[in-house]
Length: 578
Image (cartoon, rainbow, N blue to C red; front, side, top):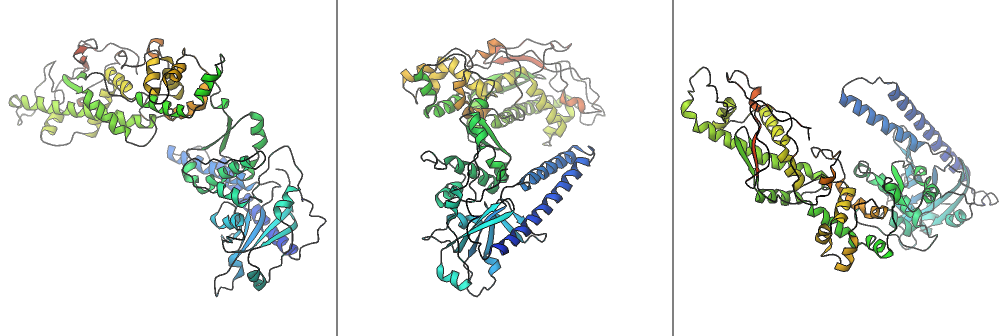
């Protein structure tokens, strides 16, 4: 990091407290060196640990090692100033301990071995008066002191007094010009530097604004908009680290040259977890193939397109066209269209992105079908209870087409007992593997990427009309329909659609798509080939004395129409797994 220049303070008379403040800074720098050495030893210790232990132990070790490396990077400030000032607060009545009301404000937090603070991080709440105190609103500050440094050497001191009587009573020495004017005299480099030592009250108000909502910083050229945005990113990561660490912070700039200009600011503030990118860098695989009319380009950049994308995503969350009926082990399982509509409405009320809510849809559909299987199994057992002797030492053998393939489980369920967990787990997995169930889930709540959503939307005029009819005039939304081809101009609001891109548990991963399937805007799709035969959940039970046939889909219907081929007893038609 570049050194701070003196701003012309070498020719000024020495401040009477310069030597004392230099000793304090030397003490803080010595402690910073000790903290950095301790972090280096911890990092080396993690690198020497063997890669053994359980998966959980390795995961925890890797997380601790990564945290130590981040801490070490934050402590390595180079020649940047560690401390850039202090504030003296008005003591409480009867409190004579001046040191308890004196805080040195700096780039990072430095504390003694007993955790006594030497330097307070500029983002901490106690440091706020250093930036926000004014003559009208003093925030309890008696004196604010700014340091001018070169490397570890203290060159000058500037003081601002907010309560002259309290300053006289405390015996404060007041010398120096305004720190901001001194900073303006410093030489310029080819890179943007941080303004953490000279943030003004209006800028600090934007930096420390609440996390929620959108913050717009407006101003003319050279007024510090970019610097405020960068310092705000550092402040939010410090204040809301637990909330933002897992989601990350993205800074989008207009060009690679601009990103190179600002790339040293956040590391100098101790933050390395911010990703920098240009707009085209968000989707590097997309490139402009053909130019677009200015009218269409302006429409795609219109804020109303966010509503269009949101409505297009909602259009992909839809109930079944017809009732879904599948047969498993002789039991007919039905998912009515009205039931699928209730599931969609229920999941829409949940929090999360589109893909994050897909597992909830899958779970509700599978629970619905599994409950029907259980009820059908119990009903079949009760119908045949007359031929089953509960006192018999062995259970009768079922006929090849008998619905009672799991007599012990059926008997337990009929008595009101709960089925074994492994039986329910395997039954759920078998239902989920049915190609018709997978196709229904893709119809009701497909797993989408932002690019898929945008391409599907613009490739079909019907989808454009459904999503944009209530947002855009007809002559405008008709401009959006185009052939299915990548276009980089779609990217600025593809990230809005990218809320659907997060990986999900149970959502499955889309790999190769057939061109015919990619061109269909609606419908559940043709059923995939049947998977290899799976065994009945009852096969895990032992001692039931019955033969087990391979059970699978015997007949599949959608609204009364046959959708799948019948299987013989010898096995199932083999195909690729979904």
